[in-house]
Length: 191
Length: 141
Image (tube, rainbow over all chains, first blue to last red):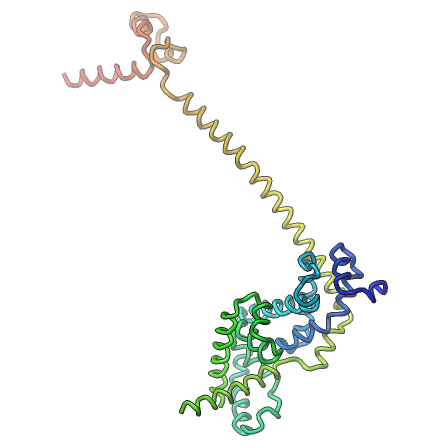
């Protein structure tokens, strides 16, 4: 693997595409943190993040032939696109399962509402329970969650989201508008 | 009122962003997940499993492709068989001399009726029609 330490990503991709496992491992070592970071925006549990890393690199391995080093930005951007799509798939799968923990949220929701009412001024200085926030966001559809996270947490532009998701710009705008309106309605219940 | 609504929406959006950020994993969890010791081994195993699946799917796919290629040949054979069936069961052309099966229909190989019918070159259907017509006439009387 050391022989590839100085190689560029494009060289590694070319080698990995011919079946060189060491080259692929080098790519994995270089980019696994980036993949973990993207996954962490959507999933809070360590196991979920590991699953996203595994799925993203597996998908990337089978798609290596479609990466020709001419991708708009780099291998990093290409892999980010695969990771976001993996997160989207996992969010959709999670939505298909029967809603988990919503009863917990109804209980916790009261706690959340009380907290919001008692700290209206310094709402940003307090950390909302991660678990509670995850459960609240599980009410959003996978598309809404994806768009809002990419816009508000990752700071992507509408055009960047359109590129990553292969959606049209107008679809992203409409989806973002609806997602925001829905999240407001959900939050309003607790304020 | 519009201003109040707008302010309310801004406040809700601000809280929404905070909730979205709060749902993200902690730094320690991100680092722990990224540096999980057997992660690359798991990736390799997932790749191997996927390759096996693709090979199996490829096996089925190749069988389907072979079957697809055989479809025109099978169709041709079926059409030929159908044509042969229709041709062999179709009425014998009139004017042809009676064949062995007609002899069976006529019953006795020798006889006046047999000789008369055979000499006129009647087919089995013609004989059948004559018999039916005759029976009809007898009943009519």
